[in-house]
Image (cartoon, rainbow, N blue to C red; front, side, top):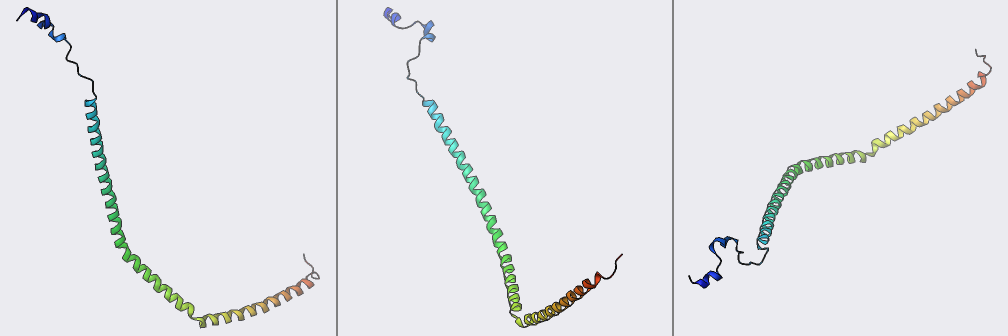
Length: 136
């Protein structure tokens, strides 16, 4: 080596304390972690959404099966109620029996009115003579 090279190069013993070449500070490493974190969060949100979709679809399928099983039973019940209503309408349309019962009721009410009037007359008569009868 030439004597001039000793003046320009640092000694070998102090080579570890020499500052490294200057690199500008960047957030490149932090930016990579932010992107990876967002990708992971998006993936987990997608998995959660698929799970929720599966659960809701399963509930809807079970409700549909329950409806399919129950609709026959409900239609049968509705038919029975319709038949019962038709029978009651047929009974209600039969006015002859109703008229007979109504005429008997009117006759019984007239008898009751006559008996009530007779009872009232008897009570009036009794109260007139009751003051004459001595009481203990």
